[in-house]
Image 1 (cartoon, rainbow over the protein chains, first blue to last red):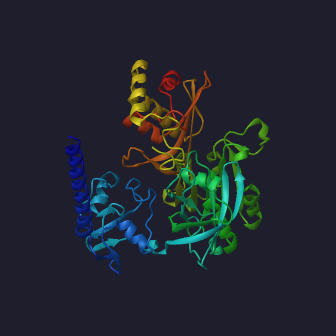
Image 2: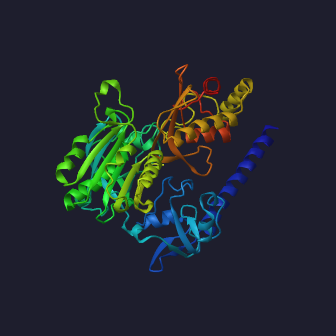
Image 3: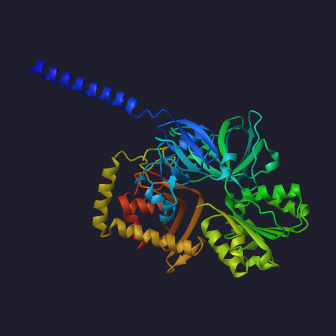
Length: 367
Length: 137
């Protein structure tokens, strides 16, 4: 009896092993797509090994589409136009694509497998995106939950970005975090530094990447990021400017102001920074110092909930009521906003009421 | 669900139960409280929406609740692998009479409505159904 049971187990195990082997062989032969071509914008062909996602195939060739979820098909950031060879739209893509996007052959590049030669279209700005290896050279505590981290680019690399753009930082595994995480942070330093770059990073409750930055990152650590990304940058006009930021939204505005301090400008500029209490303010002296650099600039911190012990004598409440004195010609005023969606909605509504044209209100929303 | 995958601490906390058991136990608790997970999700969404409508600033509702939302950069995925990303918005509702506060994110509203999942005990954002029903209705 026991012999028969053991024999049955052995036979079942053998069948399992044979099936597994067959699957491995089938995978190797049936999924071997060989070398395939990705034609980009009708101008450039790259050769890739078939079978991988379009997103990863492109990144292997140093072409980096934005991605916030690491290719899991949940964020929808890696959209691109696939004119040929993308196969049918998958059920995993449909919820993240609008009717117009579906009609326009827009796909999630992380979900498109390269099984044929493919023709795609991506913005030319994508070609400026690179992966950079860096070393942390400075970590500053700006507030109880916000740090300024400066990275030096290694291997004599330089980065070409517009003040206001962002990069995607890769965290490393630590403690119970077994995978790297990729998160977007605005660059807070000026573009002319080229081989150095600063990010302002606020601790997010339970955040994988921000916990790594705040609790584990040290001077001397090697870190990689890709970039630059984004279309939030200063327009080259002579219009008056209103900047509005909250929290780590100060980062891109700092970059823009440092850039303008270097290039020079006579534009009238007002910068409203919203914070909850005094302990949430940072870089105040540095921002006020720009009042001496520019001929027509004011820095206006506004606290929404100053505490009795703060000794705050500055402006309080919402930032919007204070726009009135800053806007002299609404039609010739641009606004640059960075912060929470609530702040951006409120400020946009207010600016439009003051007569600022919607097309001249540029923003980088946190969510 | 596990620590370090979507959030630093994960969604189960120190709870040793399987997540399906956590859901089943919370559903039983909801039955005794006479509220459904959908009703609780609707209530949390109501507070969140009021907060967004007032641009996330501190707002007092019906002289009973103070609501405030903070948003940080980025989005978070559902641990049940639903499509879409949820805004990293932290809405805090304080019952002004009892002084009890609850903080939840846009993802929690989805987790409660779609999965009846209030997270495991000991997790950073565990919401106790009993407390929610007592303080937020």
